[in-house]
Image 1 (cartoon, rainbow, N blue to C red):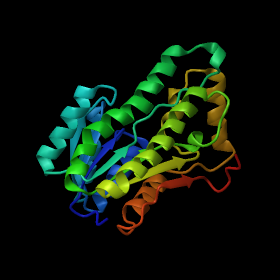
Image 2 (cartoon, rainbow, N blue to C red):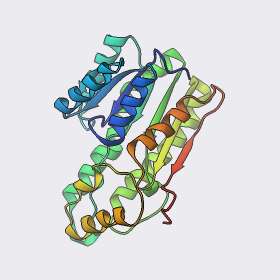
Image 3 (cartoon, helix red, strand yellow):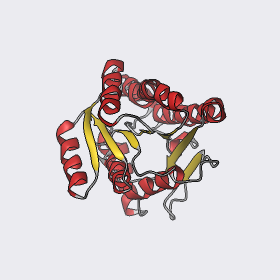
Length: 248
């Protein structure tokens, strides 16, 4: 896909991978809808994008709220005329053992990591189908193909994203000329670890930074660009991206 002049919706764009992919797409000439709840942070990022010649808009969006998602997608289309790329990036990763019963965290992960992907996909996919073109990128994880103690619910949500992505590719790829990619990163330097309320697991996760060199959000953004810029007859259906020294 030629990215110049295209329009992309990026969820979870206020930090980490979402922020970096929005900036990278803008550098390629894509008009970017930066979607998240933290609009102040989004505006700062948009200002940086515009200072370097890019274009985009801030979209206040709660991916767990269908009305918020539908309104945000409609605003992006109204401003730029179309939506060509969807990056389902918003996600949470609390960690804890099952027998600590952090049920609120379980429910929040399901709401954001699963229902959020479904809500945004349902809002944007009809636009891509209508124009018979587009690309959907869903952020899964190494936890979407391997299992880890303390991440039972998180792994479940990311296994869902991996499965949903590939079945979406099967069902809409040839039929509607829409490509679908699941990105499955290993350890990445983002805010995910800050969401862990369990002290033991948080210390364990932070300790990994001393053992391996984490990927940067830019590394993951570049993997998305690779998939997006592939020739039209090529669907990079999965990308499993790990730090070189991540053995697990």
